[in-house]
Structure formats: structure tokens, C-alpha cells
Image 1 (cartoon, one colour):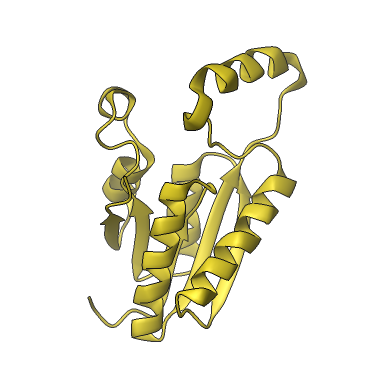
Image 2 (cartoon, rainbow, N blue to C red):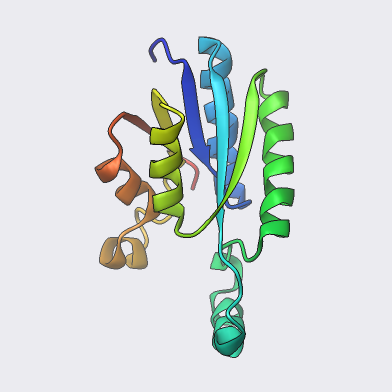
Length: 152
């Protein structure tokens, strides 16, 4: 893999993201690197609450976007526990309000990550091909190595 000092990984709490967190933790453990787990979240817009609830219902299992800081913090606690079980020792977490791609890229640059890890969820879907996906956008925008983990 390489001699990494800081590894970042994004999570949204999905089973796909959990696989990416575990792989990032394994890489960090093998390199003796610090692992930074990032979770982006959005707040509910009272005016658009009904539309958002309808969209979440329609998407079903695909509605894994984190809404609100409290669920993001819970997601990060679970991801940290998964990372520690996978062997990572130096694990930090950060919840970021906003777009997942922006959060992962910006925090990876801020923490001077040597490696960014993302799952491949969305790469092969119609929406991912048509609209783009988080892994695709991160791999395009990152200034460092990106590991796209096969998670789905």
C-alpha cells in the first residue's frame, strides 16, 4: 500500500460505508497511521420537510443520508468502534455539515491525509452514472491517493 501517516474515510452509517471504514482501519493499522473518520450531515429544512420525507420514503434503503448532527455523532461512534476492532489505534472523528464530497475532500486536505478511502456505492448505479457519485467525485477532486473499496 504505502507508508501512510494519515488516512481519511467517509461514512454515512450504511453497511457499504462500514466496509470502507474497516478497510481504512486495516490500512491505518498496517501503516501505523492516524485514522480520521468523516461524516457529513444535513439539517432538515422546515419548509422542505414534507418533500424530504417523501423522498426518503421513496428511496427506502437508499435513503442513507445523515440528517442532523446527533445521528451523525452516533454514526461516528459506531464507525470508531468498528475501526478500533479492525486494528486502528489512533482514531479521530469529525461531523461536518454539508455535502459529503466537499466534507471528505476538504477535511482530507485539512488533516493532510496521505490516503482517502471511500466505498464504491453509487458507482455502478444509474443515478451514479447519470448524476455522479461520492466516490467518483472524491477520486476526481482529491489531491492524494484514493482507495475505492469494493463494498457492494
